[in-house]
Every structure is written in C-alpha cells, then in structure tokens.
Image 1 (spheres, rainbow, N blue to C red):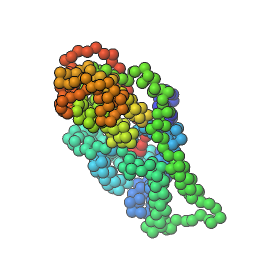
Image 2 (cartoon, rainbow, N blue to C red):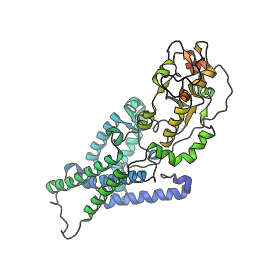
Image 3 (cartoon, rainbow, N blue to C red):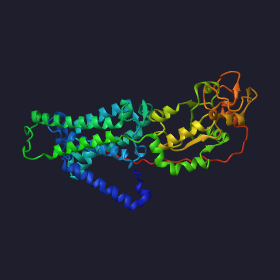
Image 4 (cartoon, one colour):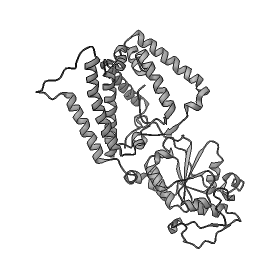
Length: 420
C-alpha cells in the first residue's frame, strides 16, 4: 500500500533520478505559469493578477482530492504520509513574516529559484537573502527555542479541527476553491491591467469548467466512499501484524518496562486503558489513563504519530484484553514502537507486589463492572494511585529480574513532500 519508500524499492540512483525528474517538472510548471516574474507574483497582493492563487490553490485541491480518494479506495495509507506538526503561534508569526517578505521581494523561496534558473538578477539577490536568513536562523534559534516549539498541536488536520468527516472537508474546500477562482477573475477584471477576462464561446464547453466539474465529482466520490475505519485498516494489515501478537513478540515483561523507564535514550509513554476506579486505586507512575474510544477517535490528541522517534508506547490493562484491542487500533493507524504490558497490572503486582495489598480477590470477580478477563485481581485498603509502593519503576529497579528483551526501536520515514 502506498506511499512507497522508493529508495528501499529501487535503490538510490533510480529513486534520485525520479526525484530529479519530478523537481524538473515542478520547476517547468512554475516557469510556464509565470512564477519567475516578481511583478506577476507581487501583483497577487494588489488583485491585478491572481495567477498565484489559481495555480497553487488549484494544485493543492487537486492533490488533496486525489490523496483522500486513494485513501478511501485502500490504495494509500494516510497515516504514513508525513504531515508537519502544527505549532500554532510560531506558525502564524512565520506566515506573517513570509507574507511581508513575499510582498516586498516579489518571490517566495521556491519561485526565487525559478527566477534564478532564468538568470534574473532580482531572483539571485532574493535567493542569497533567503540563504543568509536560513544560516542566521540556524545560528540564533537557541535564543528563542522556547517560542519556536510553543503551542504544539502535533499532527493536526482540518477534519480533526472541524470534527467532521474528511469527505465533507474535501468537498467544502473544493467548493471554496472554485468560488475563489471565480472571485479572482472578477477582481482581475476590476483591478487588472488587461481588463475583464475573456469568455469562451457559448458553443464550446470551456476546459476550466470541465476541470471544475471533474473536481466536484471526485470530491463527491470521496464523500460517498468515506475513509477506512479502524477495523478496515486492521484487516488490511492483520496478516503481517497478528503474528506479532500470536507469537507474543510485543508483550513485554514488567522488568523490561522498569528497564525502559530508567533508559535515558527512550521516551516512554504509558497508556492505561483501565476503568477510572481501578486506575485511581493503583497505576504505574507517569502512566496516562485513556479509553478505547479515545484511542479509536482521538489519535491526534494523543500525539503518537508525531511523537519523537525514540518514543516507546506501552499499553496497560488489568489483563491483556483491552491493551490488545488498543494495540490493534494503534498499529492500524501506523503507530510504531508499540507494546503491551505482559499480563497487565495483575501480573505487574504479582511480580512487584508489596505487603500493603491483598491478592485474595476471588478469581474472575469483576471490579467496576469489567469483564472477568479484565478484572482487577488485587485489593488495596486505600486508593493511592501512583503513590502505592509498587508504582514507581525507579524504586523497583534494584530488584534484578531476568527477562527476554523484546523492544526494538523502529524509525518512521517521512514519506511526503512540500513546496518552499
């Protein structure tokens, strides 16, 4: 399933040749659209020439529609398409600065390279300025690194922000784009130097109307087929992932979790899927309580897809049933370095139990209404949460327990692109 890591499939020479051809074609399109002319680019902001909006926004809505169409048809795994993490305030400030530079200089970084390829002096000086700015930023970012990484929102997209299905977002953006294209021509007719845009003969169907109609039809198809559910995504990868569960290659011993907690090279994320009652009675230090619904529907809020590469996520339940269900959901969404606490909290307390608890809970008795497989098999006099003596992995590390290590860090490849 796409996207494909071309270097792994084809090798560097062929993959780099493909990248070169794509870059050449992209540059040629920008040149044909007139993006090497700073006057045409700057005219965008005075409503005299709206080529920038029509070309770039047209490319964006076309790519968006085809991406979600491919995802809906099962041809593309959207979780593996790199989406730049959102840092809201720095992004707004950076956008304003770039907009001012665009107006004053007449170029953006990408179009300055197109102008430079045409041996234009203004493109050369703009490119030199961009390069100097990149160097200056790299040398000074430490002075304002806190602001640079402020207001993080992780992998955050419009469907998640609006809380509506992706198909509706695609259709609304396509309709908005078409309205803006129509409005852009009206503005060119009012403020442009070339007068009102000419209209095609009534006997012929204008190509631009055919393109607009095709985009609307594709957007309606995206809306109709929808995006794959968690269960459907799991079915697509079950043949490769189910053996990991069956062979118990992702269920880690409590002692390995203790070892991970003390490893400075690993960012450990503990997600506890138990009922609130059981969590309040006892939970491992620094664990975070989540529900299966949150795992299924709130993946962006958990920040797992944009987490640092050294993040290891361990799923915890009283037994293994809920943790396994969550593992399938997250694995189907493309989360890497995902493991289950072997035997859950019950096994953790069997291994690291302390004199303050009573393990005499009748076998199979459900606490908090949970099923027998997820019953909390230990009782405590007080609900102390992570203040229980057996909750702190650092305090338990002195107890040397042999285990078979299973955690192997996998690195997510950034499969995606962009325009500078």
